[in-house]
Amino acid sequence: MGQKVSPTGLRLGIIKNHTSVWYATKKDYADYLLNDLDVREYISKQLAAASVSRIEIERLAQTARITIH
Image 1: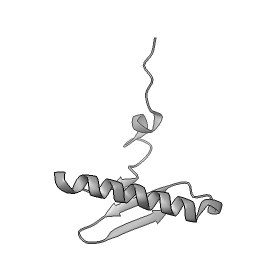
Image 2 (image 1 turned 45 degrees about the vertical axis):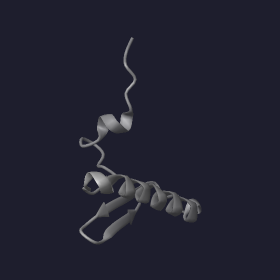
Image 3 (image 1 turned 90 degrees about the vertical axis):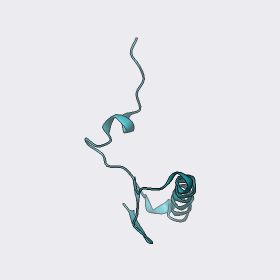
Image 4 (image 1 turned 180 degrees about the vertical axis):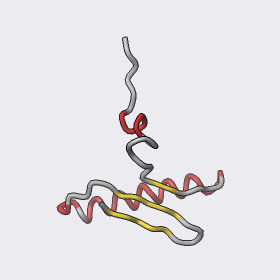
């Protein structure tokens, strides 16, 4: 019997890129992750009729860049 593997996890770095690009300290990681999830949920709800296929979030020092595809 074969093992079930997530297709997204298998293809990361080969065919697909990460949808979030940022680094955080151990104490900030949970806050950044929750913030990313909130932003994705908000954008998905607001642009539900726009057929958004991918949302990329890139955090720099004090700013964030959000790319909507």
